[in-house]
Image (cartoon, rainbow, N blue to C red):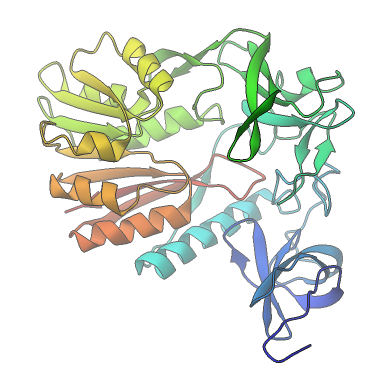
Length: 410
């Protein structure tokens, strides 16, 4: 080994003391001056780690393949595939319910402090229904033998499944055990009526997009429209479009948004990354017929569904387009409140700058990624906005994902 070059550790096994949890479903350990991100471990444990990925540099990744000293919060995973080399979907099946929420809270605290310079005590609140059978929408892959499964962590390997611990009845259990087209993918959802909708996405031979085969959908169960219920309304939307996957999440998030807007009759509000208009409906009820709500959604299908779902609310104007493009239109009414629910990457500086330029009194930020939330909180702080409230919810039990709602005020 020459000076400055790190030997590839892939395949090596050694003992480590497991340190704090890190964002992404793993914990941090150190060995020979390098950071090791360890899955299937818990803080305070001593484990044998097997290195699974090493691209050089200051860190590598590995799995805890033997636990020498276990945390008191360790439990037996309810799914045998939640193990090294198994399914990559669940990160924390080996942790008690309380520990899962403590780990997620620690990640939110760490991201806010490191990326936004904000110290905040966080408690992750559980939703009804427990840890299992909550996921109403999922996507599966089909292996060369025609069996459905999920991919292993950071891998293209497909792990066949007969069922899934976190999947709602009517999803994975309906598709498993049948033979599907090798190389296809399957989208499946079960809506509020209990109806299953599934489409097989077939590779379109000869067509590529970004180096990958184009997939064309072929419906095999249900219809193209799902029926959901939240915020005292019924919603009709693309069966495989965006909707909260936990059956209680949409109502819980809508309630928090409603509580924090501070809107009055006749006010103006923006709902950015609006989906089919869940929060827009809440805002419309608060501003009344004399108020204005602008809903912006980049997916044209979702925007069309939103316009249909909100057709009884004339105070709502739905725009289909990228948020940054629509906000460049100076004719939009100045908002008293902005609600935004961006994708996992966050809103980003250009969108935050555009919001702040219109000087809303409040911003209610719904976030599915704590790092993205922290980065955007820091950017809002540059414009004089302060984090004044935050709630976190365990809308994705057994995984490392967590949903936060933050209130920022000028």
